[in-house]
Length: 599
Image (cartoon, rainbow, N blue to C red; front, side, top):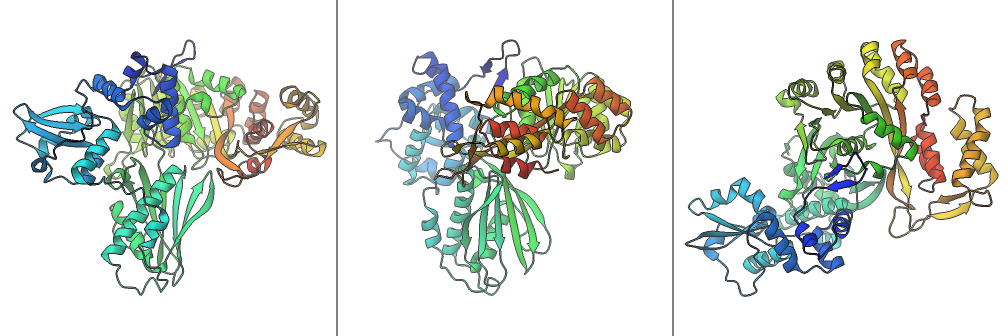
């Protein structure tokens, strides 16, 4: 969690359990932060990075943990006796998932080894398993905990080491009609459990956003595809005879009705119950032609909020964005289609605003990103807890900043405007295509144009475009025809486009051209590390600020074209203009920008 220092712009890191390593001069603060970021990027535990990349001894890490949790450090002891009487009711998988282990019991109490003693103590699970014992806590490193677990149970509960080939080899490749086969054997069912776990873990490690399970009727095989960087790529095909068991396994993991195959169902998987990754997936099942069921699993992006300057917002927009949300009250929207990164942007704004003297409430469905210092509420429509109900409660809870996951109805928008006019900063998302269209959509909902104009701070529309792979992107010298095409598309939405063209080109030459006046662009090439020349995504942004011109048009119920022209006069760049700037910077290419910016 990062609190933004609003005076000098330097981030202040909140305390971590490894700070004693810095205090003991084993690492610098910068190295610890680098290790944290590297672990997050590589999906590793930070301890692995500290040991492998910075040569920090496990003993030093253990002592740092002991100082943080204020309990003794217990290293791995090769000759430790297995306490069979304490382990008789515990299984290896349960111990690994919950990360605590009884070591011994004597007159001083039950000695419990844990990776996070505070969390385990707060859960009171040890008191329930050993009701007659008084726990005494000790802490250890992740590597030593796994070695102790292996010492006591003979093997760790992890099943992520097997390759996909090994998992599939345990399943007979019978391609007979999937509707006619008998129920699978227990052995094959166990392999299916491993397969589903393997698919989810591979998807998470590859940075996949969605997993698509697509069975074909009759003898057709079941395809599994991953959505990576916005594009679907094949992963594996499963024999037809196992498609029903595969679908049933996913339904069991998210507590859905396995007998219901005619209606869509939705649920969620808390994967820490089944594997070593602490992630959550939203699952939708949809009956499709031929009596089969498709499944789509979205991996929710749990993690820390990104810093505002890491979103890919160009300096021109970043300064205007910060100025807008620095206001003490008002209404700010982030808009775009599903999967365009709205939640990530909102949480970056909240991280920027999140200081110890600010009270921030959020209403989200679901809560994807958690931040220390935020009070976050999960919307539950089945229990009557919708966005409007939560918003009303927030107004009685002394907020400074309110974030609403989605404003989709008149009541929620009305409460948001009321909150912004009574001294609160309100951030929200909308499902609209562009910044000017968002304003017209809200007016069409029946909002009072005068109150709305007073409340509006700005609207940020965004899309995600595929980013060129830095390792293999190929530079080339752009010819005059290509630059003329870029210039024409950039200026198409500007008022007086023909007159603006020469000024825009001069500006580009000053900022992007080489010493000889020519431009270097990049094209996708492809390598082993990327997806046909693309790796990751970059945001394209269209920021419309609630200036006096915009507010006047709002009060007059101006049309989209009028709002667009006024916003461009006030310095707004459209999504395509922002994308072309990123083409000139070598971040993406024009084909990709066109794909996400079609009007």
